[in-house]
Image (cartoon, rainbow, N blue to C red; front, side, top):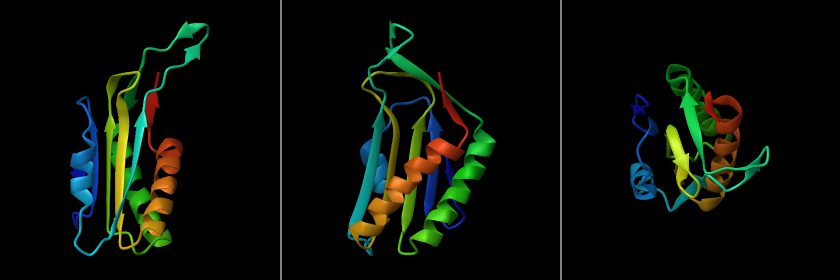
Length: 133
């Protein structure tokens, strides 16, 4: 798990089950009236005529941590009111229905946090080196 120098950003890559409550607790702040959350799960699908029962996640961890720091800076530039950001992502085998990513962002008001979460998941998928098979 990595924390930013000021402790406002938390990024964790883990083979363990993800806890929504742990992520929500990590962003709590008495100055914030909103905690916006995204929970991504592995969905049932078909690929090449075969039923998907789960996905295997891998990451290039040093680069993932570096890109997460850049993403947090970008979020704060776009939404200066954002207080805390926490993202936990599973690695290894994740069965259908299980959480693969949990993120939470706290802000004084819901609008900033909701927009920031939408941006965060889009950019996480586009720029952070986490792959699924």
